[in-house]
Amino acid sequence: MTDRAHWMNDVTSVRQMRDELRLKATLLQADLRDQLERLEHEFVKLEHELKPVGDAVGTTAKEIGTSTVDLAKTLRAGYARIRDAVKAAV
Image 1: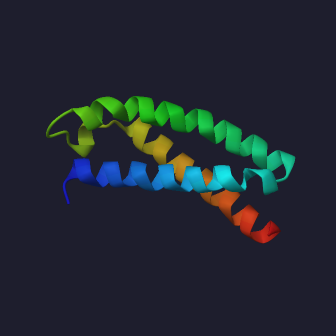
Image 2 (image 1 turned 180 degrees about the horizontal axis):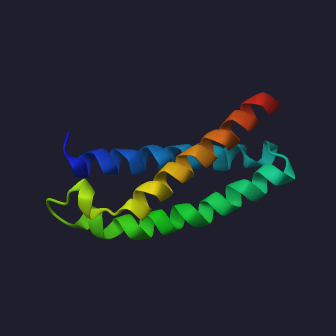
Image 3 (image 1 turned 180 degrees about the vertical axis):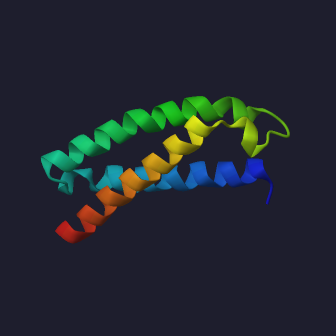
């Protein structure tokens, strides 16, 4: 798998997790909904930063930048925490 395909798969995975959580957001307690909203703003930022990468041909992981990689990791961890809280609440 190419670096570009790997990053696009990561974004797709995060997007799917986000979409599933949006459907379950009505079940969340107020503090978890607040966390989800903060993560949503960060996800929009991630998509904005990765758009040029997705449009570029032959982009490598090194060109993505450390901050974008860190942001993706933070989002994934945040969504996972919320998902686990939803599972515990249901």
